[in-house]
Image (cartoon, rainbow, N blue to C red; front, side, top):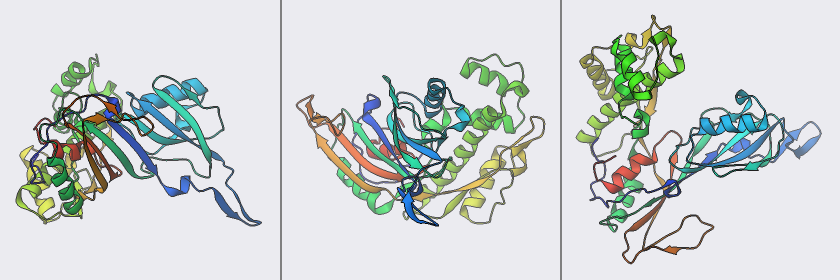
Length: 344
């Protein structure tokens, strides 16, 4: 992908989960303390309960499975707004239908926040706050110019590399599925160490996961073409191609159509009758604003806001970045613009 910012990179890398901190910002309706009733104003008393979930080194779905097992509840009775990365230290909110005791383990902590009137669903969050620590930065002062550029010009809303799996080829499997290529089965078995005997034996959600990766890949390529040819951000939406997508004759529509045709596909390809699944299209903002971006260059590192600064070396080659992004946007895309080392 093409870099959006013109400033030179800093170099540097994330070393551990403590270097990638994510704090979810939920919709305000989940934090409301009082409600108006026929008899006046009274405290919100339920019927749900809001909990703060802190985790480290685990996916959200894996954490929810552990919570359901420990509390002896159905996993489907847990409401959550977003999926947080495994290689990170994250905090997010969940809702439960009943009031339970919180708990703490080495990698999970669950604590009651307050009663709430709604069960949380996917997408019901305002955004995420990030605190990212980069180690071994060769040119740390470059972060200041890049930060100013991102604050002023926004950020291309690329899907991040984690969207494409550990092997970075989930989109290729998705393309195979859409092209009805039988090699998709062996690729899935090899990458994920499975022994599926047929594509029909694989859960439809898993198959859709690969096709969604391909949809993301196409979106990224369209956006990349825009970045190559333009200097002004485009805050409107680009299509995410799917079965019901009607591609317009504008830049994004033409470019999406060109990429699909080069792969031998059309929007109709996203309905696979043989497997009984359909992946519809949607839209995604081409650019997003980066809010409240702050950077600190230091010889020290702060593992958390509650801990003191710890001296680790004698050279100022550590960068701590704080910023906010809308829901669905990837911090790894911003880090890529800052570091510019070609790895991400």
